[in-house]
Image (cartoon, rainbow, N blue to C red):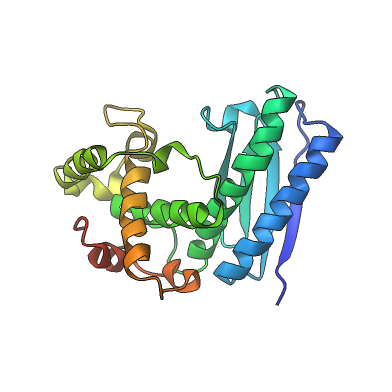
Length: 223
């Protein structure tokens, strides 16, 4: 069954021009339709917010999955047109896949309220996006084996008593003393290994699996 997509552009003071808006909308439609098919999502609302204050500085855009039927896309309309074209053509597809994986998880297991659960949710979304978009260039999918081993040690040595009240900004955005993107990189490594070793598991099932189960299957780190 064809998924129903409802794309809403929020009115803002800073907007991208009509031509780029049309390209942006078509780009979202193409990749959202593919993602929904792979994840078993029947319909979804997508709001596009042109606001430089909400984007990831490194990529010029961003996203947030609000629930099981709605996610948001942010884009910086103040950037030069040539940069906006690149952002739309290269980064928006990645964000669309990423956020729709979150939407699928919201419809089943949920994002999770603890740090290990958040790691897995972000890892699933990041690997799904990288598998379906060959221009994947998110900063959290780039790391060496030496770096990931250091990050795993940081994770193992954390205070587990704080897992339920962890700081998302610290662990995922590096706002404190932790390395930037550490939570994303750990999640990507874990889920990537699960997918490499278990290619028979489809995304419709992966997106619904519990964090503990995926961590166990990966053999990378314990919960």
